[in-house]
Length: 277
Image (cartoon, rainbow, N blue to C red; front, side, top):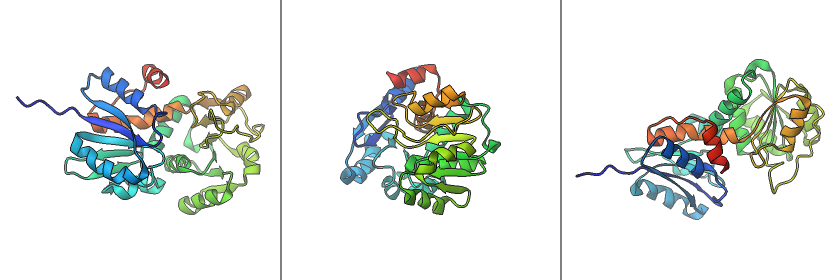
């Protein structure tokens, strides 16, 4: 009697112990009664290609990719989606039946879904979005906002040259502000997004003045440890609608889980609780 294969998936990064992805995917596997496993894998850059090419032979159907491998994985994959190319990074691998490795980026999707649910009255057409930071997360956020129809992105980064690089890649709907002007930049924004690690436990505090915020501005922070950063706390006091960063992590996992395990999971209170365990 042939027993069906048990599908395997996991997350590749270094370090990896801090990842909440295993808690989320295991919660869904259990909730939907799927006989599968999801494991964290600490893999060095030197071993990345060898490991990724070996995983399908071990019964893996796919994997998430996190820091520091999200850019390098693009050159290892056989097929890369247009949105991953635009963002310049991939976070999701699908190991296809024909043996090809397919790379995608679901971060922008996760960001927008989280925003739609957390701030249902926000509309892309409501005005410019002010984005703090110019790293990989910022690229995913900017790509998704431009695609959704946000008229202009106001961008500020501690090192201006990285922000200029994003303008060169994404075009004239980006306007660059020096970091010392980041506070003033918020006055013109319908949406403020922090994509930096400032405000995260163990990282520096955000020193950007927040007196430019007004109650009509929606404020979201990609940092989710702590769940309520100083930026969100201050914005709440001003009367802004605020959206924490945990939802982005949960929503970006949905399309990956569906592709690997054949069931589209729901992001609900139980999912959030599983991630925070």
